Length: 195
Image (tube, rainbow, N blue to C red; front, side, top):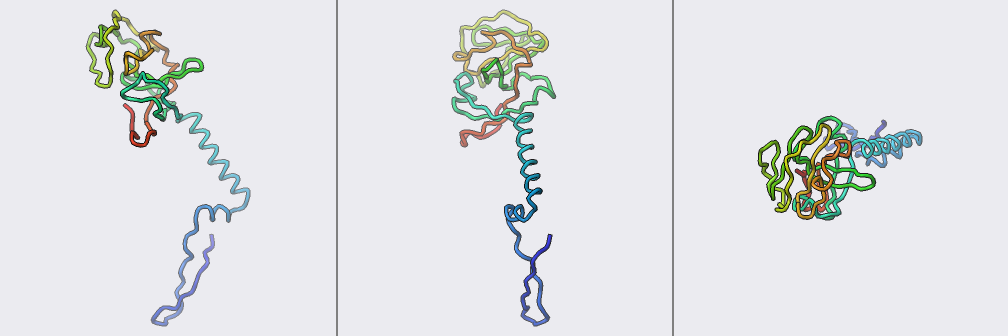
């Protein structure tokens, strides 16, 4: 890359001093490139954006109240798609679930091999009452101890009274988990990691 040099006479008259041209903007630098290089650059940027969207991250939004008070209607979320390709689901994860043309956001309560039971508002996993500070309990559910099959998970919404979840459908296959919810980016006042 060539720079234009300007001459300025120094105060001590020892001769001109070369000053480099001020830096140009990215747009100016791109326009200075040959057309084919510009096309390769733009194509690479588009390819990376498409790859990120297809394989890594997905945007979703909440259209129900079943995850209140953790997530609210209208919240926009970032989903990490390969989360369950590289590790098994964990209790407490909030996941995007795909069921045909429908998508749901639910919390994983139990994983394959766990035994779950529900008596009123209290959920038990492997015989131990679990602490659920995020949940708005609903006191009418009774589920006798049930073993979750390998390769499946038990999911529930945090707002138990308004949630349709594994209490209605039973355990769901891990393959239905589209990804893990990692970030809420809208509304701006609630921006942050989701857990």
